[in-house]
Image (tube, rainbow, N blue to C red; front, side):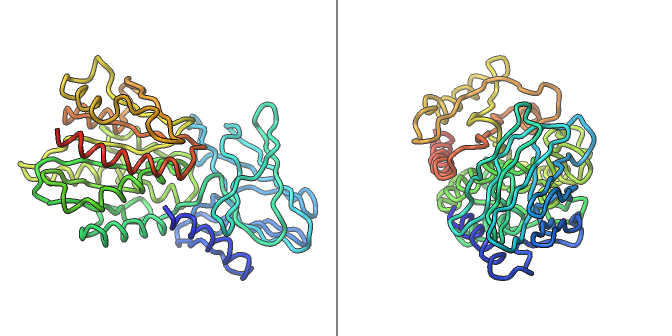
Length: 385
């Protein structure tokens, strides 16, 4: 996971040394709001991951930002924000977040040379506002560590170099961004594991865990035997780049579109699965997300066959407290019946274990990564039995 912190250092360092440089990349189709500025301070939203935010200048060194969803409610309360700033002088800058259709969920984080550090925020009793200070100079603030397609592409390239497998597109988004994947192991291996990530843009801790999980699998790619692994690390690139709370460019929650398949991103995965030869079949699906705590949504006793229950016991059973700094719980139930989740569709379509791997919003990043690497190795052992 080192490159995540190195990337953060580059973002912060680039801003500090060259005020005119918008360190994160921006694609032509990204939505952009204008700068918000006083005589001594500028806030900008001109990079991948920054949503267009309404901004009020409430003082020479004080600003209020309105945090709004990308489409009309109802929408999951995952209020994302990101901005960069340049502040002349020696005094801190006060930033107030006001939330529309939500409340405060993600503590503000500032990119520094050491990675991302949490800023202390004063949150109102109703959670509708949060105020914090940023230091003078230049920096980048986001609701969570900023992981955009650039970093995902670096991870894919690393997995390719480690495993010898090629990175390939399985489709494209509404904005024309490629949805890239990698296939670890022999292409004729009869048992397929499917790993899906970043359906919901703000769920960065799940992406951190997924990256470490796949690091472990890529290192073992030459010894996977009769197992191959399809990895789709960022299914919703438009939502990530545009700073969405939940949806893709089509205003659809992709984790409710499995079954309807109204969106090009989910259709791309389904179409790729449809190209599998008759001797290859999915045997497991894991979908990486973030929520308030570490947990796995798994099939309940009314859904799981004896073989599926035995696999769950081999892989995750009894390990809830096994990883230092990363306790988790098992939730054996259908959390969203009839709603078109990835978990439900894979289980119903292929009669296989299909789990949602949820990482806590505030999980320790190193502990989450270490647990994910161990869980990847344990998964392979469980599949081998």
